[in-house]
Amino acid sequence: MKTLLVHCSGDEAVTSLCAKSASSSIDVLELRELSNASPLLKRIKNYCGRSAGVPRSYDLPVEAYDKIIIACDGCLSGVYPVVGQFIEKHTLRAKDVSCIVFGEGRVAKKASDALRVLVALSGGTVSRLVSVPVRTFKRDDEDVLTFVRHEMTVR
Image (cartoon, rainbow, N blue to C red):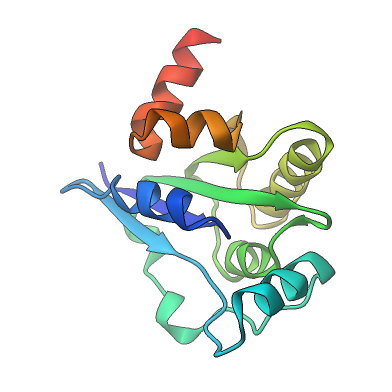
């Protein structure tokens, strides 16, 4: 059973913790806007809903994976545009899709709703959705999947 963890975060600590989740049965893909713009300008573009699109390097054989985990920050428009474009580009029909939203409150709720809609439009259904407060996640300094498994069993 192969798993693909697709993540997008503006926080470098969260990005490095997501990268720690890679193993023999888990492939990790980081989505980000590949431009030479400053980090501040990239964040502003993400909040405004503009993106450079999903680069060709993100063309994966998604059919080869049984489980897909989408982890991303919440933003004012729901999720970062590059995450939405990645989901729209791939058919998620008959896949076990789980989502992780880094954040809390209204922004996390908006991102959760956006992820459910985007995955549904791509032909899939979200089986599990977890909202993780970033400060708790960074304080524990463990990889994403271990932390989320713990959160799911505790709740």
